[in-house]
Every structure is written in structure tokens, then in C-alpha cells.
Length: 71
Image (tube, rainbow, N blue to C red):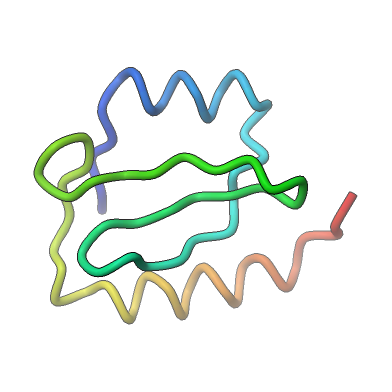
């Protein structure tokens, strides 16, 4: 489970929740859509999550995005 600040959550919502692909940038996470729109989530600033679970989160996200058709 992750906690995303209200501002970044609003950015994702304004993009119609298309920011579904997740990648790591150190301990930070970046959510992107398939049009190069990105939301940078900086650990302990606008996102809280267990870093020791990052690999699991990224693997799960990869599996999920393979089930979603690209626009």
C-alpha cells in the first residue's frame, strides 16, 4: 500500500488515471501514461511506502500493465 499526497493524486486524476506505468528512480517512483506524461513521486515528500517492497510493487505493476491495452 502506498500513500500519495493530494496534489499528486489530483494530477493523476486530471490525466483520467492514465498514469499507470510505474518505474523507480532510486527510492522515488515515477508514474507515467503512454503519452510521456509523468508524475514524479518523491519518497517521504509526496509518497509514503515500504521501500523494501519496491521490487514487488514494480513487478506487480508490470504484470498489470500487460493486461491493459495501450491507447
